[in-house]
Length: 193
Image 1 (cartoon, rainbow, N blue to C red):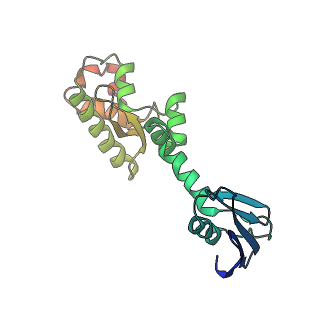
Image 2: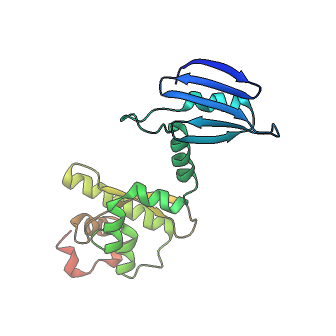
Image 3: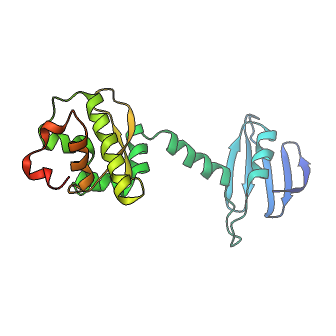
């Protein structure tokens, strides 16, 4: 906010005029703090310079009510975002897809292998199975599947993995086309692939 002028009234007492109104800046009796008062705002500062800087940052509300410090509100929002956990950040990035995965309406390729009892497969084989499923999905639908952030079960790193409907054909085509997972296909599923 643009200051029109600051006038010294007495020792330790100033008047500042701005577009939002008139404010007074006074020093306490001990001289250690300065108080900014006016338009329903009272704040204490260590120096006169800090009080004037705070006065310049005051913004009137759209309705002309009490002035607020927008920079303070923005700083609080940024601080809250910085202090959230990594798991919450990735959960927010995933949004409704993570909720669908938790509910079981969407599954990841690792979930499919667990349902088939293939827990003994190495992580590298599970990853390649996911690549085969994604390739089959893109070939059938013309676009990539929805992605969700998940924490890797052994390394703990957050990775972006695809999520599919539990009965999607690409899951079974991937099982049939990847040589490390062919043994998981039963005769009933071979017709689907």
